[in-house]
Length: 82
Image (cartoon, rainbow, N blue to C red; front, side):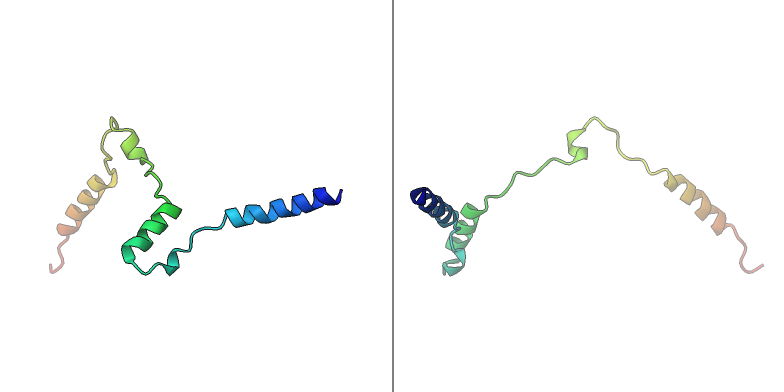
């Protein structure tokens, strides 16, 4: 039983020792440090946005543009110095 407990305890310590990341901060060379970080944390692929997924979709048409144009035309016709 003691052997089992010792093996279990050693297994817990070995896992943390193997999981240790490289210490990229100690590398003096800029390109070497960047390569170390790239190896430790590889860049993830960019997820396509909803607009990129559906290329057949029509362009967005703002419904308020026409209304704003009508309001601006009405404001220009107001006599301010009559």
